[in-house]
View 1 (spheres, rainbow over the protein chains, first blue to last red):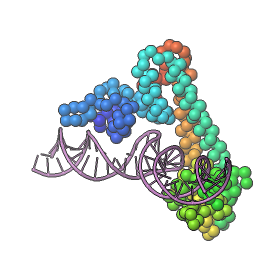
View 2 (cartoon, chains in turn cyan, yellow, red, blue):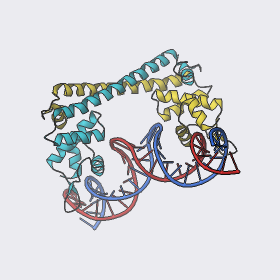
View 3 (cartoon, rainbow over the protein chains, first blue to last red):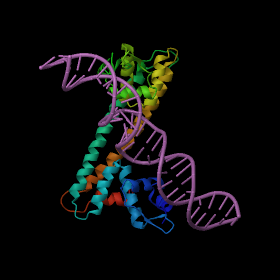
View 4 (spheres, helix red, strand yellow):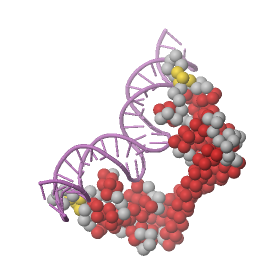
Length: 132
Length: 132
DNA sequence: ATATAAGCTTCCAGTCACTGGAAGGTCAAG
DNA sequence: CTTGACCTTCCAGTGACTGGAAGCTTATAT
């Protein structure tokens, strides 16, 4: 299967597949006589795995770790769970940050009348800072 | 005031101040005889404004827009509010995405016993995909 | 006076995870 | 036989910095 078909099968763009190969996330593809990359059904499985993990916000480096764990039949489920729990805590931290940002922005916009007058608490508060 | 003092006064690292100058977010600093950049109290104000807006997640490009609005005495508060409301909606979208990711991860980890056995629903689901 | 350390300058490279595009080879259809 | 859709490689750009090298200036300590 050529890279284009592999891309549409897996959902990972051809460009990105080559990129994953270049950084060593996936092994170099076997080449056909014309130099084209050739992908097996197993390769597609791997690409789908990567795609799903990336959609869940795992970094490419983390995905590399997950792939190793996936291929390693002797690893324990505790290893995998630890990585996932760490990632949950990162996600929760980011959510909390964004929620705090959201509250501040809502407060600012609520106090801005948003008409054709020039005075605007949003700019005033950005100049004065969070406590002023 | 040298760039180091400007950095500690404003909270923006010296390196970042130079970077902001290089991309045109702030005008080129006036130089002393020895070539060192010289900052006024007003410049510090601007840097603080930038810092606060960045902390609220505005992109550097958006901060550029906010700075223009800040300096433009003839602008209306509606202009500013529109930019802020758009940003709130972006933040909310991102929060929703992260919450969905979080739920999926929690579901996965809940179903993974996380002991020394090798079978792990996290890896299985990453391989099978979100619906399988 | 001198040594040293801190602070400033510029410029280049690296980060992360791609993405776009140019230049050129290959292949299938009309 | 030509067009267009593939494929190849390599280089550059994104966003927002950050690190580091090489070299100048200034402040401090002896």
